[in-house]
Length: 184
Image (cartoon, rainbow, N blue to C red; front, side):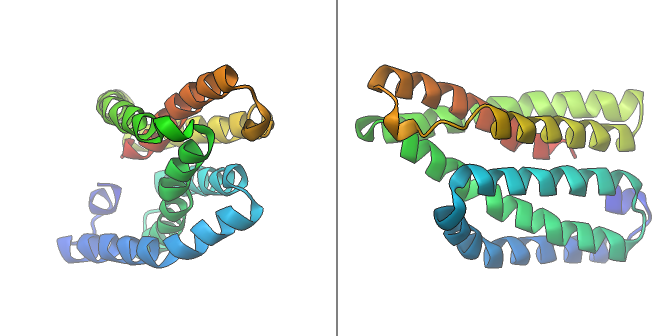
């Protein structure tokens, strides 16, 4: 919407989204491998920080080329978080509860999508489109800090009940943060 708001043609808008999807597709495998190498939490944090930078940039950049550069980074963000979040949930859920945990995550993701879209629409209408993007960038930055500071303990060493609670909290957190990208 912001690309169109700044006067880009429908052709340019569609081209930028195709570019984003291409970057996302090409970066997903390498970023999944990076997650295996440096850790899922670290990869998620990198993705979230990219998201915060992209959304802050979208609030101020007005050129189609600048937007294309931001959508390149947006594709990297998506590749660094979408599959990683599900892998992370799979790693901390009990083996017998993996499908339930991912189903719970997906359900919360849908609810959060509705809430985030509604909040964004209100902020967009009352203040401005830039305010909606800055709010999303700021929220995502704080979620990245949350993951850096809170999720430090290796979950494999936690007792079973603690694993379930940690999985529930992490699943909810991931559902909320992943849906911040609907603030557009």
